[in-house]
Image (tube, rainbow, N blue to C red; front, side, top):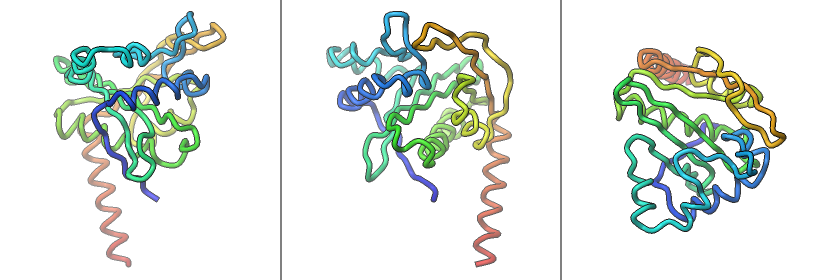
Length: 199
């Protein structure tokens, strides 16, 4: 079953839930890891600071056009994750990061649905040439997910991700070009038409 999700502007309640999700070591390590102090890494803003931020500070983070942070919502389940789009406008690139914070929903298609929305933003709305991700090598599920939506391995960043035990792991850089994205969409549409024709 194909999932449908929506990317919405971040709210304080969303930030509170993200902060709760990141208390779980499994969630934090598969997102960005932990600082030596034990605090979960969260790029663009720190959830515990955002909860205390003034309306002006909160709005500034929310409207940063270079790092767009969205909440991922399911129409029934509500807030289930967070999405980041880092717009490298001068280079024509967009870096994507995705967190499904509810562990009970992992492996159920919500990540793929969220990636579909994020890629549409990157290629259809922002009209960028390339999207890329940086995935910890030990996050096998995320690597498979990225491959399933068309990303290809481009390289490795050595010891780029911190782990709670003080160790560091490599991450895999994967990229998807606009032409590959649109070719894939055409193939998927063609397959859907064949299925409808058979029915």
